[in-house]
Length: 479
Ligand SMILES: Cc1cc2nc3c(=O)[nH]c(=O)nc-3n(C[C@H](O)[C@H](O)[C@H](O)COP(=O)(O)OP(=O)(O)OC[C@H]3O[C@@H](n4cnc5c(N)ncnc54)[C@H](O)[C@@H]3O)c2cc1C
View 1 (cartoon, rainbow, N blue to C red):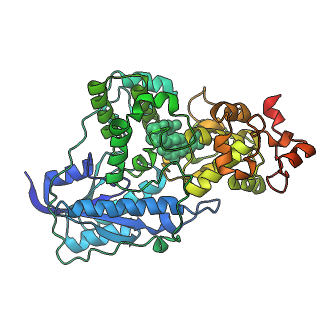
View 2: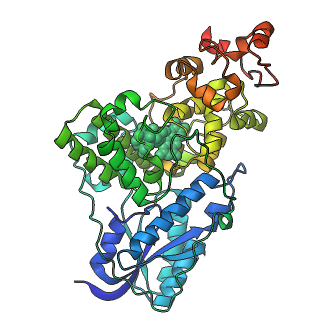
View 3: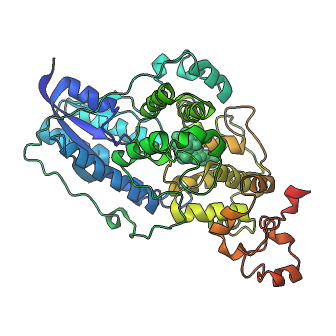
């Protein structure tokens, strides 16, 4: 039976009303639900260990838009959103104390920084006789439905996938409530910060970006609908997913999934609906397959805890060859390595906050396997820059590429030039991000370091002036 007790609903990386278990749980027990979002100063204004902005302008803007959209959706359902700027453990506690609520409902996080915050809040709530009640909202699968305990999750992705995909049912998403009962009393709602207040200036959208990503649940559901139903891009996803240019080559759902504007269960059930109405094929399965990767890395994060952030990774094997040479890292970061496929991808990341999966595989491998730079610096840079940053997916993928992940089979060396030729055969992608190379013929665009001085003159390109000399000769991949 619902009580008259007030509860707080603390939104975190679950900025949505559909399939939001914490919202559902809160409404099960209370007729007065107080939604709160706190812009954590440490996340927006802080820096990482190697000195990068913790959250780039791209992701800050995306989160801001997501919170604005959430507030609008709550308002349209008779509620609203309390906005605070500060430390969530302090701000949520102050609200709990002022309103004399009974519980704080939230979706549980599992990585260190987030856990510290929720633990600290929990302790403070205990001091006033209140508690946190955790719900789940990140994964396709519920850990309690898995055929193994979390600590026995298979270390190899393919074993994990085979054990879950055929036997574990993916639960139905929770419905979006039509109304949400809220009474804030005399409490001030608080103002939405501007992007400047979150530490960034406004910036221009780069028209070369794959998509003009806008934060929020409404945009997330619109992209899902477009990708699956309106354009039916899903039908050909398997063949196009490794593309590099434009909005059509992969789902582009990751930024919304990462901030929880979109539930993976919702994506799955939409896929199933499409399959039952229009037919299943390899592509519809393939998107499901990719979503399983996301769950896998989340489970690796739970199983191995902080080891995913440490140099030796879950394997506890530190590669002593790797160095902290910041001058090598800087050239990589700025897209000035002289290897066009790497530089183009880094320019895209720096200009838009997004990079394709193919680009991420290649740039990460180049940093670690070719330049022998400490992979943690690269992972931190991605953490800072990516629109879709997710702790487990980012650090988990870097673990794999650095060869310190849990899967014994994942320690591959990537041949940058054969990848460039395969995925960008005409050099269209490279020329988009490195216009200085636009006159190069397709058979030379990925290997400009092989141009003789007379060829350079003919093509009106001076290596070392118009485009950097290669820091590593491309012949290492073409011999
Ligand atoms: C070094 C490196 C760092 C990465 N960091 C992140 C990150 O911080 N956040 C993030 O969401 N993804 C990360 N990825 C995975 C992948 O590159 C992106 O999920 C994908 O490019 C996003 O584009 P999309 O939504 O169009 O993907 P699609 O190809 O359409 O895939 C659909 C969804 O499946 C999931 N997915 C696909 N591949 C992976 C994968 N390898 N690992 C985990 N989930 C996956 C994502 O949620 C994605 O949105 C990283 C990969 C590498 C190699």
